[in-house]
Picture 1: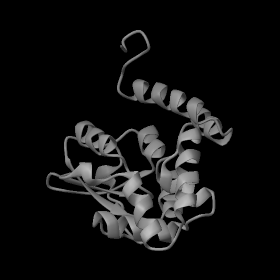
Picture 2 (picture 1 turned 60 degrees about the vertical axis):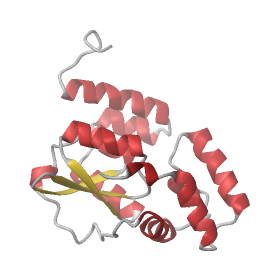
Picture 3 (picture 1 turned 90 degrees about the vertical axis):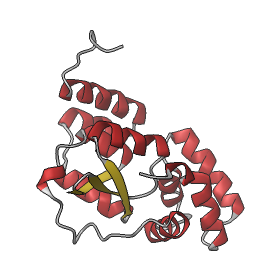
Picture 4 (picture 1 turned 180 degrees about the vertical axis):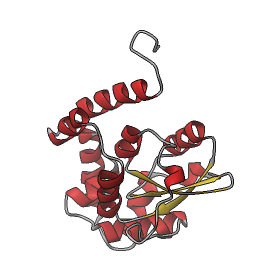
Length: 184
């Protein structure tokens, strides 16, 4: 994706303040909460009740000029279902949509950091084109189409992000054929 550096959570927060959705104080509180719980700012804003998923989607589309898509009505191509590891999709709330020549389209329910976009391009070998979807719709389709192993799902339900990511990393390593002894 070209110009990935223009994407930042702070800019998203500033756009939400500019739109009158949240106050500067709420933004500051959400930034601290996101850091504390190691969650993306968009999700912290929604979980704290400061912004709705529609507010976040609107702000992302306006600030970063990224198109909106209703992921519940999009027919997700079978060709894209194995491009990225399942744990990676859940970790970053990325929903693969389609593949057009050398362009891999994905939907995000919040905001994806530039380094994650570069990682998607590195893993997939394709240029990435981002769409914005509603966070709950992205999450629901991920759960429906890209289910996690029971152990990873249990760790996520237990509320332990660190444990979820550790188990997820282990599962990714298994998926790509590396064991603990080979990594590093």
